[in-house]
Image (cartoon, rainbow, N blue to C red; front, side, top):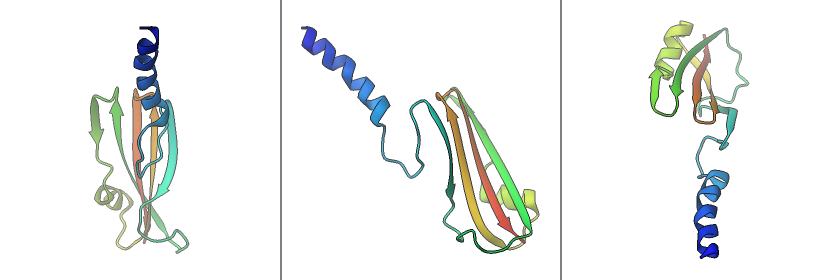
Length: 104
């Protein structure tokens, strides 16, 4: 019986520690990463930066517009050079997701 209980407790812990394979690296307790957006390599000169952010709270509510379109409009960009993203999450309580668009 004790062995079965130990296995039952071990499975949820493994899910927290191992996680799933995702295109965005994420930690079970804390995440703060910057990753490329698949457009450009970051070496092209630019004159403007547009930023768009959305947030999540307790993993229950998410608000905001972190789309490329919003970032382009916020930066008054006419020609996109490259795109980056950042992701920050603390214990699933607070999350911040930002798109950066660089261009002219």
